[in-house]
Amino acid sequence: GKLQVHLAQLKYLLPRLVGQGIMLSRQAGGIGSRGPGESQLELNRRSVRNQITDIERQLKVVEKNRATVREKRLESSTFKIGLVGYT
Image (tube, rainbow, N blue to C red; front, side):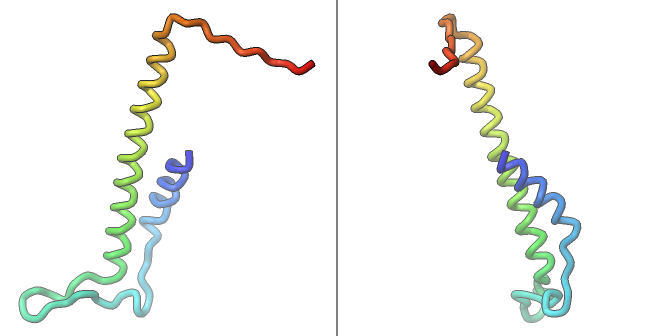
């Protein structure tokens, strides 16, 4: 659940990233034909995209584990009961 919420927040944030003032400055520029480098905004967007990819990968692992546990629970021939109540 927490991963899904964090993923939704990042997906909401991604198109809303904006650079203002110093945020538009270039980082790691080179001399000559290497170009001016990336702006801080581009770095932030790449970071958010990487986080989204990592969380989606983690969610797939969790879904796979839960499916395996569910299958084993349904295939087991043992009866499971729960006693509820307090006297």
